[in-house]
Image (cartoon, rainbow, N blue to C red; front, side, top):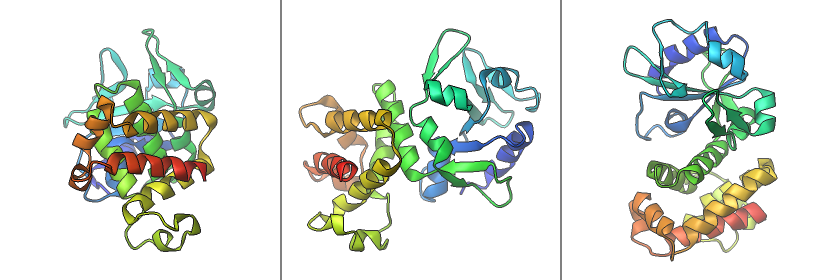
Length: 253
């Protein structure tokens, strides 16, 4: 966990009292994986509607919105804060239509808002962090939305595939569905299984599209993933395809 975010999250919680606040993005991955790259930026989904988001009148006055990016604030210490409104009606619609005419897809955000855990005992119980499987869906959806601009997401997705469960997790040994499955494919298979338990048809469509594109050695996206993935993947030309197939096998199990 990055302790430097606790103060910022406390400020946000005071501004949006009794609203569910869920951390996603790199800061959430850092919460799950202490060796994950550090970040000063914080991405949050908050159970507020567009009107409350546009006013945000309880946030500190020295926090400045970024022009042309209605979800982003600049903080005096250089941090960036992204806040996505995620009230129930917006989640049901599946999209935020900003006043400037742009739109933000909420695929994955809806899952993060209901599949999460408490961020820290020092913070209100409403402050949460998305689960690993929910973060996987948010990363997949974000990459599919802008694949040429989000190569960093592929590295994050690869890490989630390989480290979804720890090496010593009993599930890597005891899950009957893993019989005959290679050791390095097991975390991704378990990720697929756990996604199937919580994902909607919309999520499933995105996951299958991602796996099909990334897993095809004839596609440029396959090369992108190989370049962003851990060294162990780069040494094995079948690594990407095998893991994408393991994901689909687990998802369909």
